[in-house]
Length: 474
Image 1 (cartoon, rainbow, N blue to C red):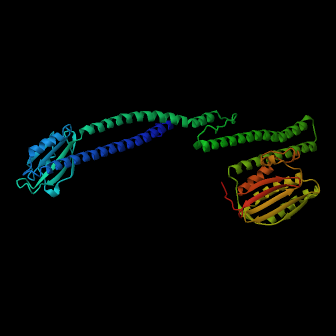
Image 2: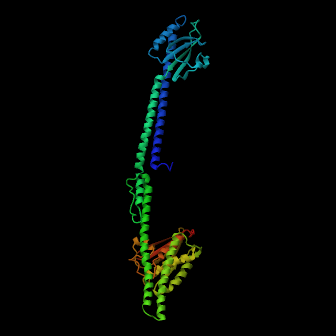
Image 3: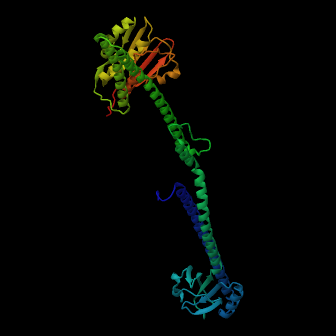
């Protein structure tokens, strides 16, 4: 069914089936109510005729014996205009004593009166398509009638065809109305489904118009039903992410072309200069060293981009071991001490914690943070490295004084090749991938890397939840 019918068709059929089920239930309840009403009305009418017969029979108690012909005449007068009623009086042996009205067929099992204990009060049966109801009573005769039977069985029979036709007419009208309701509900269900699913068609239309060059389309929420707000918001959020990703990809493509062009141009320029004139071995050697430096930078940049690609795919080779962060950071500070002394900078480290992680990768991440801090710290400045441990986990802070980075640029600092012009110097010795690599490594350890900058200092904060456990992917 899911393959044969559209969602609109299925919803309209479901709506139609629901409407029909409700209407059929109402129809059945209506017919039952009518049948019970007429049954109660018939029983009241039969009971009234039994009371009338009993009254006429008692009115003859002053006579020596009951006059059955007189009783029949009076009953015929009472039933005048009631052709659907038939009354019989029988003695205990089944002999007919009197009758009034038009004769109706009687059920075969009641051709003779049963013993007194077995007389039914009410019966229903159908004969040749006509439904009948009867009510039976046994009446004891007065002792002053010695020649009369001890008791008389009075049966009042009613032909219910006069109201059965009415019920049948209503039933036929209900059937016709049901067919009309079915057709109308299918049409209304289809219209309601088309209107209700209009946002989905709009969603499909917007999706078909989305391309790499056109990611600015969004679905409106104003005219959408409440039930579709969540998927519409999710779809718009997906388009926001796609648009942002494509913008970043476009910027990354431009940046990588620019960054790769510098070492390639350097290689070409040194080679062209070396080949322009005849030179001695020392000059050629100097040109080759210059080319080697440019090639090394190019290789380093390519290696770092491959590293970031592996991190995004969760394929970084991790070898976690327990690490004392104080020892690891002291080793890095000892390595950077000559460079810091050259620029008249000072290090201040405090705190310690044990972290489960990959030693070489964490050293690379913290090395990139320290390199960034050294690069943008003014002379005589102090670089602060703090290790904090609490119930929330382990936090490593690398803070340095320097130019203020505007808050709107903080998230972009970890993008590849991004440099905040107002806060970062134009340098060529870096690849522009250091902070992106630091964040990738810390993220691989289930941590987060953030930045905060004000007039006092710029602080990069690496936070590792808990005791620093992480899941190695790949």
